[in-house]
Structures are given as C-alpha cells and as structure tokens.
Length: 504
Image: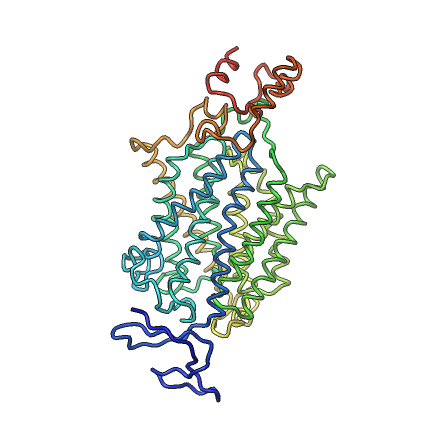
C-alpha cells in the first residue's frame, strides 16, 4: 500500500516541518513507505518528469541505432539489423523485469554481484534510491536504467551484420546481459559496488555501455569470422542508404542528450552542463572525422561526419557530468582522431568488424574514461548541489587517472572473457547454435534467410529488368568484372535461384 499526498516537507521560512506531517499547498509528492509506513520522503514532480522524459529519449536511441546499422549494411541485410536491435530491447526489457534490475541495483547487493531482492520487480515502486540522493522513486530509476541495459547489446550485435542468425542472438542477449552488463553496472553504479567505493568516475557508462559494447562486438566479430567473400573483389562493401545513416545518427544524438542529461537524476544545473558538453563533443568530433576523411579523398563525407559524431558522443558519456566545456571540445577532437585512425587496424587485426563497433565504441570509450581522470573538476560535479569528489588532474588529484585506467582493464577483461565463454557454450548447445548463418544464407542476404521479408520490395523492378533483356539484368546483378555475380544486389530471390546462378 502506497500513501501519497502533495505538499512540502519544508515550512515557508525554510525550516523543516514535522517528520510525519507535510505542509499543505506544496508541490512535492510526499510518500510514506517502509514498515508501518513509518518513513516519509518528498519527491519532486519536476525531477520525475525529467527522468521519465529522458527514459523516452534513451528508448528512441535503439531504433536510431537500427537505422544507422541498416543504412551501413548492404540492402539485402537492412531489415535483419533493424530486427536485431529492436529484439534486443524486447529481450532485455523482460530480463530486466525478471532479475536484471535486481542483479545490478538491488540495495542489498554485494561488491561484485547483485542478489534477487527485487526479483520480478518486487519492492520496486515508491522507495527512494540512494544514487538519486533519494529524490526519485525507484520505479522511475529502474525504468530509466532499463533503457541503458537494452541499448548495450543492441550496439554490440551490430557486429553480427550480414552473417548472424536471429535465434542464437536472442538467447545470447538474455545471458550476456545477466553475466556481463548487470555485473559491470553493479560494480560502478551501485553504491555497494567495488568500483563505486574505489572512486571510479564513470558518469553515464563509459565502462558498462561503451567499452562493454565495443569489446563484445569485437569478440562477436572474431567468433563469427569474416563474411562470405570478405577480402576479395567479390564483396564490395558500401553503405546502401546514407539517408538512413543520417536519420539514425539524428535519433542517437537527440537520445544522447537524455542519456547524459538524465544521468544526474534531477532537473538541475548539472543536467544542463551535461547536455552542453554532450552536444559540443559530438559537434567537434563530427567535424574532426569529416576533415580527416577530406584530406584523403577531397570529399565531404556524410558517413564520416555521422561516424565522428557518434565517436564524440561515446567519449563524452563517462565525462559529461564531470568536465567543463573546453575539455568537452578536446574530448570530441581526440576521440574522433583516435577512432578514425583505428579503423585501419581491422586489416592487421584480421577481423571483419563491419560496423567498426570496436574503434567507435571501445576505443572512444577508453579515450573518454582516461580524459575524465585528467579533466574532471570537483566544481562541475557539484553543480547538482550533492556530488562531492576530489576531482582529476586539474584539481591536483593525480591518482584519478590510474584509477580510470585500472577500470578500463577490469571491464575489458571481464567482458572479453565472459562474452567468449557465453558464445562458445551457446554455439555448441543443441537447438540454439550455431550463431553463423549458412553460406547460401549469406549470399541471398539475412533479410530473406532469417526474416523472409525485405526492407525494400524489388519484385516489380526485377520483373521489369527481366523483360528488358540481359543487358539490364547484368546491370542489376553487378558482375563488376568477376566471374560470379556480386552478392550485393541479389534481392528477393530464393536460395535455390541464387545457388543455381552461382553454380552456373
């Protein structure tokens, strides 16, 4: 039973009213809770409204991510990636309700892993949350964090582009969120976690979100192996729809304002500063990446600008609530430069990381976490009126950078090792594995092989092409000088048709 009234716990002169009686005509939501409703707390409807708004903003990042990945893929795989990202949200939403929230944020958790105190969202309603300085009820906090949990595997699964089966990755999402994301989130965001107590500064998820997703994506890429035709002239990989990339980046950019702005858990000055640093870092990173690409090709790359903006958003995530605007500008420039040059490492690393999940998320996440140790200012963190920290190198707190570095190592080791173990076990589990689609499935595309539906309906166009003669048909399949038709443009055909055409 929840007892809710509206009023204020403060008198007009600013003194505290009775511990059990609220002053009338106030705007705070007064809630009594605990045994015999002996405890009383005041929540601000304004803060609750802000966090609920940010929850919706973070939610929209997930379809935005789907559109980004869809645009970057070849068009015969576009729908497959939209499905995987939205399905990841659905699976994690159930997992979070079932036991995920409890494993990550139970108020009686241990230093390394949570417990089942809040199994099935038990006791997740009106109680205050210490991480919000007891200003937001737990149900609001739990749903805001649910959006974070849903976003991370969606980012990582982009590494399954053009060769991953749907069912194994649905199971993987549930297990991975339980054993990797929930554990790392507990370490740094739960007041009982060892990293939280140790003083790691990770504002909105440099470790749990960015490094976690980037390392997971790298493990997925290595485990699945390169796509069919990768490294040969039979596979010309180019984004099939740049407008989808722009649309996805726009959704992500808007959502990231709620991602970082809401991580203060109040509508206050620190939230405003977080949004300002987020927007500035993304802007400077987008321009930096575009300029770096221009020096090579003398073209203003739209894809380059979007990729750079995302790298900047990634890097500012752990730093947004701790650093000032000049530092945010530098974070954007450095993260874009590092990620841009790192995309060339895919060759020497012998990894087919189609979406550059490692370079854009893991490496930019490292940059953000390490620069947080240098540029954190105690005065910026205290803009919420509550947070008191010693700061970073700017404030003479020299140990903060080694702490941040150790945090990067810990997240990388746990995420990489456990993710590989999960994939190995599931891949060899009957009725779940294998993760990778068949060669024929890769040739015809994941849309047809896994979904039986398409992002675009080319049936009418193909009939027109067939009726106009072999010249137009040759143009549609794009031989590109090869003895076999390129798999890029085989749309809407059956597996048998493709198999027979490639044999011929």
